[in-house]
Length: 227
Image (cartoon, rainbow, N blue to C red; front, side, top):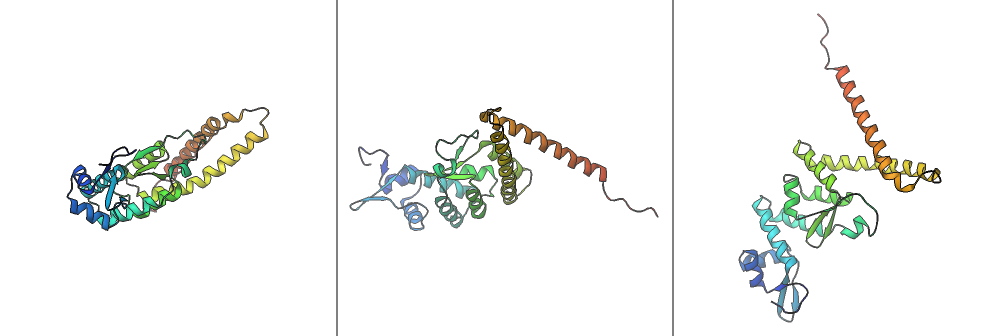
């Protein structure tokens, strides 16, 4: 191990021992692009804790039934995603709590539906970001409800597409409330925009769902004509 470095580093043999896999497996993963290249110092290749975390993640995903090809696609998609600073912004106000996850934990949340296409869609929406070897979901609330929808039988691809469509309406609502607050800024504190807007939208959505359910109950199933 290299001395005096900020992060711990390993030779390949030490890395394999820490990960609990043979050296030849580490070499195979490196050749397949499943782990990033090591830092080289002369003829010595140094691996660090990021490599170790990636190896443990690969082992976990393999145990859950993922293929090496699928894991490689997953890794490439994650590495091409935006980082946390870009998605969350620096110093911007938010009420949402980000959640840090390993790829294994993300797969567990969504019952194996975290394929490359769904992952790319979530990255494109800004739901996911990357921070080193970790994945960051921008909102614990959104993560939990999305996971619950998948457990209720809604495909993750449908959840993501619904989220995309909801965002269009949410952006329009945000513009509407921002306009109201700007117009009456002398009488109303701008800091009260968020809780008041959220309360109005929640109440209106609840009443809209009530109306929809009442229509379904009133219409009922189609009746057979009397003979």
